[in-house]
Image: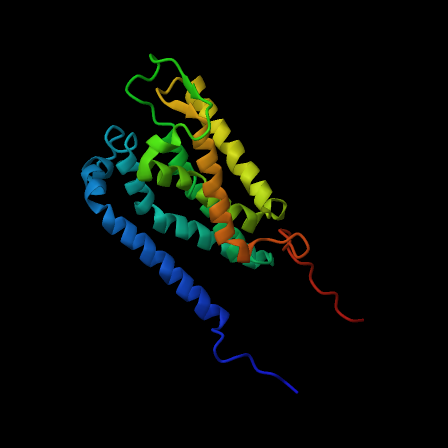
Length: 234
């Protein structure tokens, strides 16, 4: 006897549309909330000026939002190529690859922006855990949580070897250590803090947990190679 699916369970396509709509709505709400500071950088960004656009937080965030259609186009093109080649999970893999890069590079760029004393003030290091956390404030903590959030969200969707919380924690912490080291070595007039590493890694783990339903499991890892054509029966 055939058992039909429960009528209360939404179809997979409907669930995807709902999730995508919620993501777009959340992004639009965030953009609306910060529209005024972003618009302050709009004239220089639209004029293609480096100073006042790409060397400011507002300018980088604005250009990140403006470039979203291009990122979506890249996802679509990669997925089409993969589908034509017979690769399994073409959309998920393409979205994960673009998302990791597009959602991480701008935040790392902002983290490596030089301060007013760059090249003059010697590098500073804070190795006492939780000492700097109390001075970050909600904005500082939120920003640090976002730096490697996209990497934590999409990496286990793309790579089965990273589909575990300890490995994402190690990935987030390792990338954060590299950024903090660069701040110190390049003398960017920033404090290389262990608390930044802790919060960055926590953000990666929290984002990874949010995408756990779509993690690429080792046992059922989709192949990146085209599926072989079926052999006709003789």
